[in-house]
Image 1: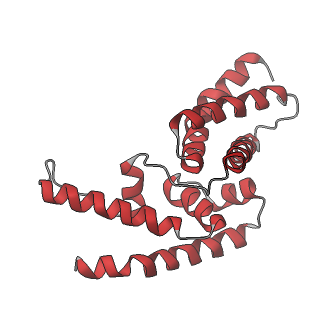
Image 2 (image 1 turned 90 degrees about the vertical axis):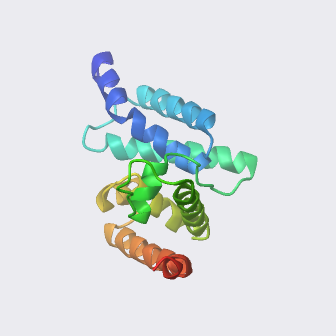
Length: 177
């Protein structure tokens, strides 16, 4: 792989690797460091990287670096306070109003916090899969490749995670009906 090809690879995947790291470590500075370390390792392995698997390789590498960091710090995998629009995707709620009232803003913020807490109640494997599928928009096939699990296992785990999230969030949804 030439230097120019590698730079194209960085441009293509850098944002998603960063988001993935940010979801796992919850700290923008750590996520930047992990993203940089991921691409340093990719450069070191550029001779063996294949175009059809490089995306999965990068995410798996970033994930491993995140877990190593979290193990060193003895933290549980947190969710970031990141991009609110991505959480809205998970909640499937989109406000049509241009200027919501203060009350609506407060309710929306509360809902986002409730969803974050619900996701944190899931087992770590389910958390990872929900984050990858719902927040990052990854395909089941890509998640399976990153986590080295059969695609069917990923699908059933995401299904169970969604079911569990519906159960955890059902009191909130009933309040708003």
